[in-house]
Length: 308
Image (cartoon, rainbow, N blue to C red; front, side, top):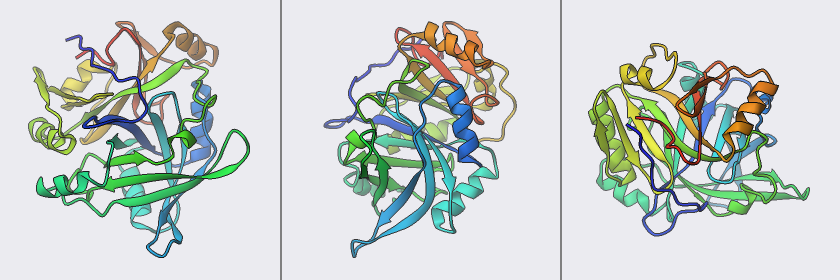
């Protein structure tokens, strides 16, 4: 099935819109990860330390550090852990399963307002977190980026760290002149997750995202957002979508989908740096060996993120 979603060319959602804001890899070594990502033609930010704001106005380390890739729409996060906080322990526990995609963050206009609805739906959301980190801007100044993050307990969403994220300072994430990628990738367009029980997971995510789902024959379902798509699949069905997909124990963050404004340029960059990739139906596929534990599917603007 060839499927192409509606697409909002805007960084921040309005009204009842839901965007796929970012996805996150849990990695062992941020420096090594950064080097490999640069080889793929990405611009990678410096390391950032996450801080949680306390009621008295002070800030404490959350236990995670990151580096980002920020195309024009959406972004990719690569997370390491520091210390012995709950988030650091969760990072280490998930990393013991596999290095790769473990995080999906969805954007809404008012993230804290999602909490009462999620409570009614039985998701037991944690208290919204006022998260912040200092960032060095392209101008050379250090400024504070601020976010609102709403998470649920790990056992409620066993697929990984599934959360809502709202940006108070989007200009510090997507800085003008800093979003261009050498490989011509300009947007995060979707994510593919292998789940244990497709029907149950699809129903649960549809409630979490307050969006309708569509089941497809042969073990695949999707939830279309106003920007981006969440695809859920059995491991058997996933092997029909991804080349040389091996057996995995679900849940597993199988692939991220990325839009290229110039797919020929993307391919040329991969060839120039010796990156191994597959080409199928106009899309480029990077294997987990090349893309830090999960597939990357790169598609041109006139094709759907993935063929279902």
